[in-house]
Image (cartoon, rainbow, N blue to C red; front, side):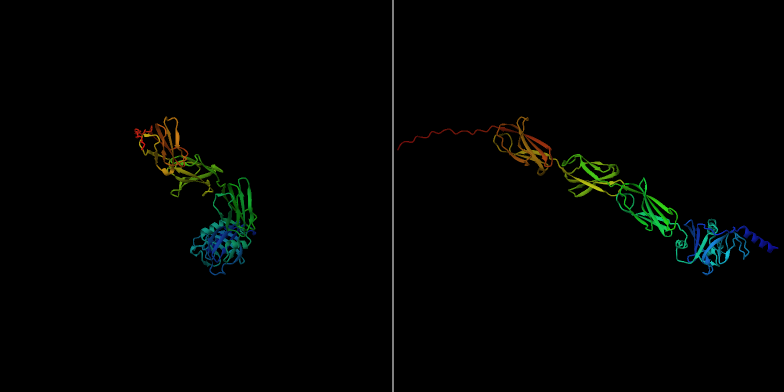
Length: 472
């Protein structure tokens, strides 16, 4: 009676947990088991979904090789030989059974199932079935459909290669897309678009560009995974990378879209100063830059000191189109303006202007070689002493009424020393004006007073009577 009851329980369990068989149909799924690596791959709708470690036969011949459909799906299948109920912790079949139609057995002998010896996974340990970790086979059981084909092989090929060689339409999957130069870039820059795939058989590649108004195909589907693109107009673009397997019926198996910005390089039209050179030191000069599109460009201002032969930055890159420059030392200077688009990393346009900066003349004194007063027609040496006589020009003028000035030595004669010979009596004001040789106006003035007297009359000797000569 006990024996009959046990057999009845086993039969009822088998009937209850066995899903009815059906005719083989295409499920869009595929399982591949590679005995060389003891790995199982599950494909669904053309994609490699997941891989698992498995155990296969102790001898290569134990686990059949070939192509077999799954014809039975059983939960908690009893272990008949040992009389162990389904779902029991000691059941070597685990609690999920995916029976294969292999070697004339209709899902009753060879299967993908769980096990009670997880340490055996990854080894050659079974009598012919394919063992999985219990959690793995439970996941697979819920995903896989009846009549899904299982390929069992022993090979060095990849799962994708095995699937493709069997005619399975494996979707191509993008792993990475690249543009040879980082965004943003100036217009007319040639870039290379590259697509890398992680799966797919005989992948085809397509490249498209969206300019904000419409999509344009750079290259239609081909086996070439790269394409060249040279945008001629600035703007914010979208680059679409599309892939599909050669036998795919889809418009695309996988796509990636990246944003790529193209800009108009900055072009300087002019660099000007509000004051023309030369200028005296301490003068504030406004430097103004004009470019093709000031609103989109940034500017950097630098100055080169011809004395120290060094560049220094006045203002780093910013949207500012002007600066104030106030040189504190005399010398020859070069002002450089560099312009770049706000997205650019380096300057695309450079202009320079030169400035001569001078030390204004400063008169320290005006001297005479003779003290006044002096009589008319006396040669008087006038000497001007300034901060830098060799760089300065001098003009000498005289007046007796401070209304009318007479230039006795103009700026066109640069001597700081002249000889003045007054011919008219009077009280004179002598004015000396000085300016730097680069200046157009007087920088310094000094005056001295000098009196000229009438000429001194020399006394006349008295006449002496001469004796009259007597005839001899």
